[in-house]
Structures are given as structure tokens and as C-alpha cells.
Image (cartoon, rainbow, N blue to C red; front, side, top):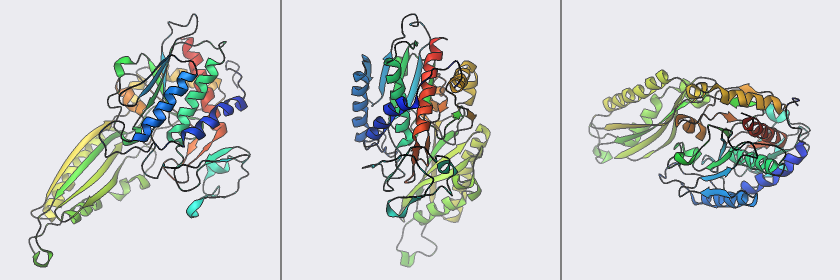
Length: 420
């Protein structure tokens, strides 16, 4: 630990973290990208209400739950720090819909010894193919039972923020400036903070806890667009279809096949973007394709968007009488430039890592967070690790020591901003 940091035993933090996390993951908070209303699922309300009461139970008087399921808590600065800049911490309530998040049965494994971990339905956590898991030998982890995802994305982030907050409030000798805690719905849908009460947020900077392995520090993300592509066919009895039928289902499948396989999520990493078909459905008369587009570079995103229309014309040429309509919508933009305009935000974060004894690694987010949108709205919001792995899958797990490390970083950030 850096001599400037606070000496905190991980045992204390783990006692604040683990019971919280195990409680949070039991809430079924899967969001639904097909629902426009925010929140998109009733379970998010249940966890939000529980968090509201939990924060009140810590003695925080200024806590609210908005009409759209945003939990916002405000804590005044300690004596002499009332006028320090306000700083925020954010995590999201929902979990992804890729794998079931209902009836999560988290498994706590103490003193992991590097063995394979057999899960339900034939799933296996194997250290031979998961180097991060192999590195946890001798440590405590929490994993799924194989029937659901775990929900560390992002309930680990919620637990780390709440635990850090309880620690700060129980140690009045740690001075701090004004704080804002924000728990958000529907992050996994990519909506980008709809109906967020920005006018009520005072923070000059915010930090999301929504990353992966220990040390990850992220200040840039994808530019993200979503395209809904509609296919209208020309229908006639298939027995007399020669030269007449335009099969909308086949149009959609053919369109998806035009997407470059070398520019798919499974074929790219680092700074390479991609096209990702999320859902395809339809029949002879009409069909639809939901498509995500991701790229770090805006010019490359423009190229991808232009390609969608080229693909549409190619399909119409192949299926005379058929019609393809492309409707693209931006979800969020790369936060790199906005964060770079406020270098102090990253300087504070790097110092907090140093003080907490955590070596940071700058990397791009191959995705986005609610912080991406908040940055676009004017509050720079880089992202911090949570200790989770294999997000959105039945093989999801989280390292308890790494959760404690994230908690230490948050505590150091709180202290540093109080001195700003």
C-alpha cells in the first residue's frame, strides 16, 4: 500500500461486501431491450426499493427513487469539506438477458485450490482454459451453479459502492466532500439513461464500477448504434411461386449473411469494431433483424452505417418485389474525448489506484456503460474494475479479494476528492 493511502484490512471490507452481493443477486432484475418503458422489468423496482431502504439505513437522509427507477443518494461533505467538489459513483441494477437471471444460486468457494469446478447441466469452470481463474488459487471466489448467470455485472459494482459508503460513514475520521450515489436501470439494454434527472446531479465527475479483472481502468468505449432492419416480402402460394415470391424470411437471413464474418464480435478484439446480429425473426410476408454496430472510430462507424444501405440494395436486387428498410439509432458515443478535456478526473483515479495498492491497466471498453452516456451529457465518468469475469454467461464468477480492492479504490477516491 502507498503510504498516502488508508490502511484498511480486506477482512473488514469482505464482511461488508459478500453478504450484500449475495443478497443483491437473488433479485431477478433481467432487463428487456424490447420494452421502451424505463425500467423494462418489474424486478428492477424491487432491488431499487431495497437499495433505497438500505441507504436510508446507513443514516443517509437525502435519498430518492425516481419515477423511472433511478436511486440517487446525496451525502454532505464532512466539516470543512462542505465546499469541495461533489463526486459521484454509479452502478446498474439490471442484468443482461443473454442468460437467465432468475433464481440465481451463487456459490461461495473459499480458498480455491485450482481445481476444475463442475456446474449444473455439464458446464465446467476450468483453470486450464481460464487463466484468470487459475490465478485465484488460495483466494475466495463466488460463481454460478451453472443454471443462470451470476449478476456480478453489475451487482458487484453496487456492493462495492455500498460497502465503501458504509465504511466511510462508520469512520468519521475520514474526511470527504459531497458525494452522490447513483444506481441505474436498464443499462444492459443500451438505452443510455432515458429520463435521467441530470438537472439534479451536482457531481463534477463520476465513476462507474462496471469493469472486469482487478486493475482495469477504462476511459474510452465504443461508439454504439442499433439498427432495426425490416423486410417486406411479396407473398403467393409457394406452389405457384416461381418468378413471383419474395420470401421475407429468406431476405432477412440473406442480409445477415452479407455481414462480414471477420467483423463479428467473435472475430475481433482490442480496437476492432463489429456488426452483431442480436435477433432475427419473420415469415414469408415480413421479417426483422436487430443489429448492433460498434466501433471506436467515428469514421469507421460511418462506414458501417453506410454499408447497411448497400446491403439493403443488394437484397432488394436479389428479391424483386421485396423491400428493405433500415432504421439506425445512436446509443452512446466514445467517452475518450470528453474525459480527456478534464484530465483531473483521471489523475485522481490513478492516484486512488496507487494509494489503494492496485496497479492500473488502461484499456478500452469493448462495450459501454451508463458512464458513457453521462460523459456525453457533460459529467466525465471513467470505469473501474469490479473483479467479475465471464459476464452474461453461466460461467460467470467474481473474485472476492478483487471486490475488496475495488472498494479500496472507491474509498481513496472519496478521500482524494475531499482534498481537491
